[in-house]
Length: 392
Length: 88
Image 1 (spheres, chains in turn cyan, purple):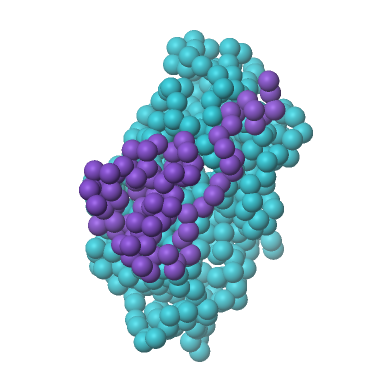
Image 2: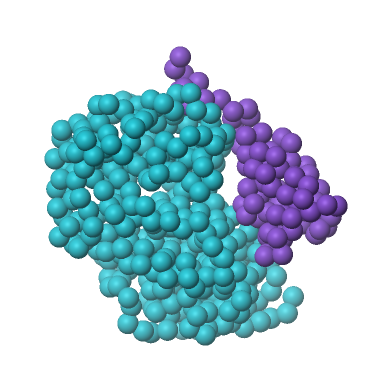
């Protein structure tokens, strides 16, 4: 149990921790990752794999996603391993006239923000989606949306970071964060020894509140549970991502026209074809603490919703279901920030369902913050102290 | 052991595929699964799960001591979306 030193200690070996470590190591910093389980052992392997702008609020959010999409195309070339990257775009579909009106406004806003969005009419949908229910009104498309295998993406970042000198300590728990007389970070105590460092990144996702408490701060991140179903390998239903428009309502906590159970479990259709010729079906959103048992009522509700949009799925087998915890924040934006009151302590967490989407831009920006460079995007909306301000 | 032996029939994963994954850094059963899709097919791992664990144990006796056991996920046997949804 010897003591070691590092320029930066990253807490958490999920997609955010690995992206941060990768970009830091590219800048030549000496990085240690402390992970209580395995690389991609938590949320990053209990999710789907999208780099989406289509479901981001027009403006800062969607711009951040677009930037992340650009970075991922660079990562495809930079990283040592491939991660099933493809960029077929994605679509949202509307169930009624009201949603079409809202979708139109959404598209206009996104276009003004410079993103490649367009409306799709009933014929567009029909000609691309042979198996879609007949009563779908239309939808919208974001042409640059891309998809990856989230676990392989995390592994690829980890393998490359390791080659660049990052030390990965898996099955290692952080027990204490040492502060000096001025309250600045001095070191990290772990189950396998002390690491002297002046900079710590809290990339612990749904567990980042616990890590924050070690330096006396309250990180407003709560676990939000989501279920996903996996189909068996089957004929192609479609070649790219589809979500229902009211997924946005579910995501942003707005009112929807759905039955009670669908509303209660936050169920909204997400269809994602994978590189393995099967597809994933989501989604649900629930606050039930750290409980990760599959709830049969929820997956039943998800299956019903899937059949409503794709009646053909009725006869397609489900191989398995899984669920994970998404790190939720009150305003649906992650925290990518210094913590002013604890010099040397940073937070990169709270991405809810956008962690895979935003990992690249988060890692890049975090490496820039730590090395005092100008950041690729403005980070004001991502600051930790935005929550303190609103409470006053 | 011949490298062409198929370990996971559903996903057609051979011993050679496992070897390749191991040599590029997949050193637990779970990582092997994620990289090769062994145990992720239609039999839901009934046929190959033990083989993968056994192979991994031979390769790296410490692997089984880790927390990364292969998981069991519902449903136990494949059912259709329609059956799950409670439709006819």
